[in-house]
Length: 259
Image (cartoon, rainbow, N blue to C red; front, side, top):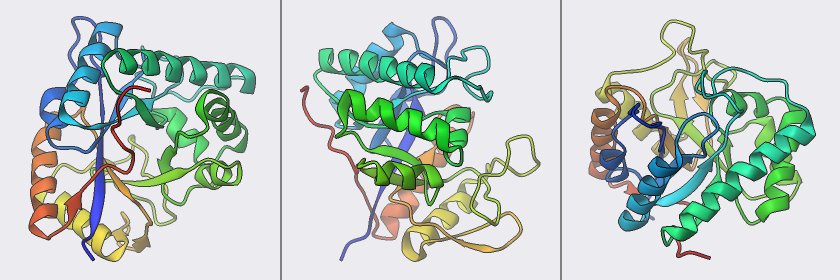
């Protein structure tokens, strides 16, 4: 049986005159695109153009929802009420759904961004608020999150489909959490090392933690961050390495027509 994996990247994060990443290049390398929804990055014109390119290339579209934190790029934890967080997530998904529909595509899944992503991995209250938002606006949308996290288990218990992901360019703690970006070695930059780690992950379900511990991760998608200077080079190297190993690259959610 042919092994396959989804490759996803965070894109659509430019804002006005401020350019973040090479979205066109990344869309030629990944199978799923986590597209910003305006709360941490992304203005309407940027999102419209990014969605049109994703549809043209047949890349699956995910709503990359965030705390309302443009200044901090969505990487600062926030203590919102459950009602407020649910409303914020519904608002963002709805906005991207409208823009995607106008581009001839549709939103196929939801992936929280930055601090919200990390928080709902373990914070039951905020996880439930995000889950409630998805169930209210479209309960057919899978939630993508940290593989093996408590947040994904809560989503499954609430009846949502889920997709566990691993991070190509991030180091892991021995218990499965991502190493804080403030810590040395948290972000990986060597394309060859990253490719070896991810090929092993797909083949064996194992990645080496920062202390050398073999960490078992059940992931159906690999995230490639699009906001680093070496993002495209890493993505190209990883894609080539996976294909050379006979591992197919395929979206877990259908790109689909507008609905």
